[in-house]
Image 1 (spheres, rainbow, N blue to C red):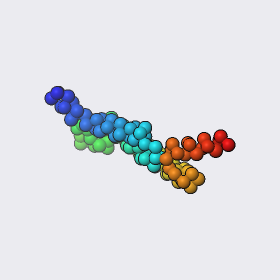
Image 2 (cartoon, helix red, strand yellow):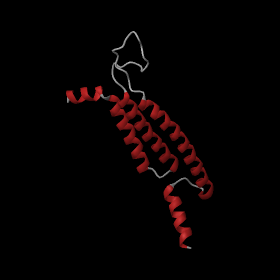
Image 3 (cartoon, rainbow, N blue to C red):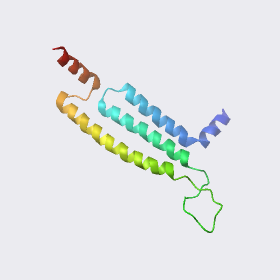
Image 4 (cartoon, rainbow, N blue to C red):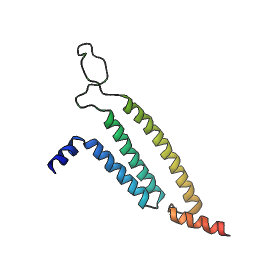
Amino acid sequence: MRILLEKLMANYPYFAAVVLFTIGALTVMTRSNLFKKLIGINIMESGIFLMFVAAGNIRGGAVPILDEANTKSVYINPLPSALMLTGIVVSVSVTAFALALIVRLYKSYGTTDAHRIAEMRNEVSER
């Protein structure tokens, strides 16, 4: 058990990313409110961003700026961080679009409950 805890503490960013992704996935699967589903999706995205940034990190690594005085430094890979910045921008825009759609659904159906909206749509299609 002690070895497991040592490994867990050494890899805490990965563990935190898995916990965040699991919380988000459970939120999406168990809630019927569209706002809560969207929050769950955002939590899942945060877990993914954390996983990629943690994968690009090197313990004891230096900032990727060339230094003539210290040529034997191990540098951190900046690519995962740059890609995750792009992912965050896309995530924010998709979240804004989803919020606009949810507000539009609320105006049309008077609820944000996905099950109730599906029932209303089925009632309309049966007529």
